Image (cartoon, rainbow, N blue to C red; front, side, top):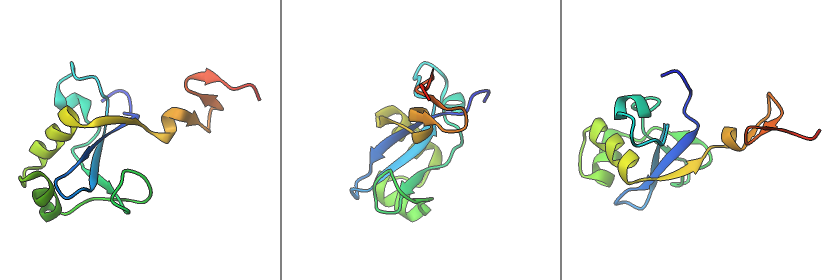
Length: 104
C-alpha cells in the first residue's frame, strides 16, 4: 500500500467493547487495499483510545459471532465509523496540522 492509513474505523462488538482497524476509509477501493494490515485492535479500556491490544480469536468470535479474521475486518470496515487518528490531527515531526503549515 503506497500511503499509510491514517484513520481508525471503529465498530462496537456484541460485548460492548470497541474494536478497530487502521484503514483508508474510501469504500470504492478493494478491501485488500483499504486495510493497512489485516489486524484488529481494541483499547485497553474497551474503547478505541489508550494502550492498544490485539484481541484473542475467542474475544473476536464472541463479539462478532465468527472466528474469521477476514470477516471481522470486513464488518468493521463496512459498518464501522471513522475516527481520525492523532497523526491526522497533528503531525509533530513536520509541524503541520491537518495538512496546513502551523503559525509557529
